[in-house]
Amino acid sequence: MSALNEGSQIEEVIAKLRSEGFEHIVVVDDGSSDDTFEKAKRAGAVVMKHPINCGAGAGVQTILKLGRKESWKYLLLMDADGQHYAEDVAQLYKKMESEQLDLVVGSRFLKNENRIPRIRRFFNTLGNLLTNAFCKYNFSDTQSGFRLLNHRAIQRIDLLSSGFSFCSEMLFKAEKENLKIGEEPIKVRYTEYSMSKGQTNFMAGFRTAWQFIEQL
Amino acid sequence: MNLRLFQIVVILIAIAFAFVWVRNFRTAKIKMFELLVGLFFAIAFTLLAIFPDAISNNLARLLGIKSNINAVMFGGIILSLWLNFRLWMLIRHQDRRITNLNSKIAIKQLEEDNS
Image (tube, rainbow over all chains, first blue to last red; front, side):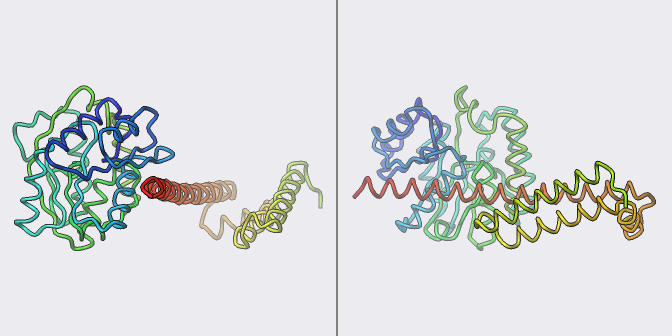
């Protein structure tokens, strides 16, 4: 998880993951000004700290670098704001194993019961349109932060985006590396807190789109 | 040749910039390529200040532009776009280096904590 000022949520998110049996939880504190680092450490995660804030993509880059260094077999990426459900990991893993995939993206839009706010739906549709224009496969949720990567994907995907455009860049690079990609429906919960995080306005969305185009 | 005040000012500014570039090169603050680009612009602006009509008219003819004023403005816009592009590339490069450094520091710190 890449986390920025998630002090109020991080302990709970880690506790839920631990209760699902995940022991090796890595958090990159991307230059938080609150107690995210201390709380994540206290909750039992392996915590790295960026001296300055560089963006969500920078956090994922650090996790991928550590994963390559330590030769991890699998890596699950998820948001640190409590938006995702730890119990969905099993489904992603099942999908990966049964279809011999290298990267499985948890799609919020393949599950009808998800109540996704209109503004998020709008930005995600724009993100999908832009990303799918440059990808071979037509993804239903290109901006999802819930992803499972296997060893091959960890080794081969080298990101450059430091912002939220890492989501699109990862899919683009995975296709370029001929990795097998799949999608699996996941549940999400949007709270007032999670709505205040991420890409919250049009300018942020525009910046993400521009960052993605820059990496092409 | 009668030089007007604005021409003298441009020449003095160009000489001052050339002097700074040479000094920065001698103290290894800039590379040879940057020095050459800087000197090229200093010389170009000096020549444009000394022979404004001749150079702008030739530039207009070369680009197929009717008026020499438009040609100078066009050249200015192109130059400004090029400088902007260079600046953007530089910022992008620095951004990547900072992100990379951030990652390395974070991983090194973790390794030190674990050892």
